Length: 399
Ligand SMILES: CC(=O)SCCNC(=O)CCNC(=O)[C@H](O)C(C)(C)COP(=O)(O)OP(=O)(O)OC[C@H]1O[C@@H](n2cnc3c(N)ncnc32)[C@H](O)[C@@H]1OP(=O)(O)O
Image (cartoon, rainbow, N blue to C red; front, side):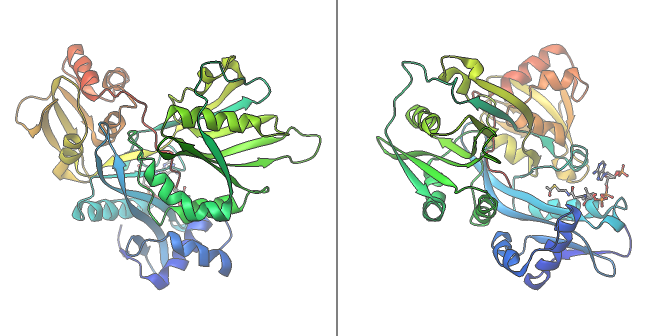
């Protein structure tokens, strides 16, 4: 790309960037009132812009931490707000933004970056791979009966949105989610959730669960009944439970809400045991499974060292054309990760490493579709053991 300048934007340039980004999503510019609320989502010094005669592309991020298998947390940059003006696409503007952004992350000691992708073909070339999945479900409320023997749980407390806003960040932090793929919610994340909830047609409700050791779960929902003849729907926007008691009690509560026919949950972990809570597992219909977050390992050796590893050993070769310091061979075992000159047993791009990193995909599965080159089939089996995880990776923090 020539005759372009790529740089961090100052505070007084952010609204132009916001207008540009909204335009790429076919959304009208923010009103003054909307912009006043949107500024709360912009972490200072984290928005990039590309200029020719004026701003033509933008991308931003905010700082967070990623939970990796085993429960350790590594510095994470959450990438969002990516857009290139429609009359300047397909001439390398995004490529320039991604390269500059990733180099900035590496310089700041960030270990990983993640994002929610608008389309599946955009981010693989920049080293991002699908690293968590989510599923959408519809629960037939009248058919869903909680099985005898499921935990009964503690007390629930109903809050309105305004009260919940003052309490949710602390409550969410206190749930101490050690699921791989989970991320810390920064002060720049919460305003986006409230903007989305404020658009709900019915009042948004929050239910807290009080367990033996304090609040150990919460659910945020609202209802919808487009006209009196239609079935009423309860939409779950957030469901986080740290204990089986909280999980079962909050579901008992949701099923007890009057005048509801179906309950929709759009962001659920793949191994969420909801079907098994009910006497009839078919009370739950899975309506979709999709890619959730895409992950980019910015510092490969630090990322490999941070996660728990199974009892196996392989020599892994990684190719990373954008951040070449990641490229090379690593001897990865349960106890250590070291650079090595030994011959590679598995070779893959850094995007593919991101796919196996949180345990969502098995190395042998990626080898079977030609995404990983393996020296022999025994190696793939050892790699499965090395990178396997106990729980499904899930982020649960849309941005
Ligand atoms: C995390 C988020 O914010 S997700 C939101 C992403 N933004 C959007 O979807 C808004 C609408 N789209 C856009 O603004 C732009 O089209 C972008 C940002 C997706 C791409 O920007 P561009 O400047 O056109 O990308 P750039 O020219 O650098 O393309 C690099 C390569 O990716 C390919 N590519 C880019 N976008 C797409 C796409 N949507 N589908 C398929 N391929 C794509 C290009 O063809 C090019 O391939 P090549 O190197 O083989 O020629």
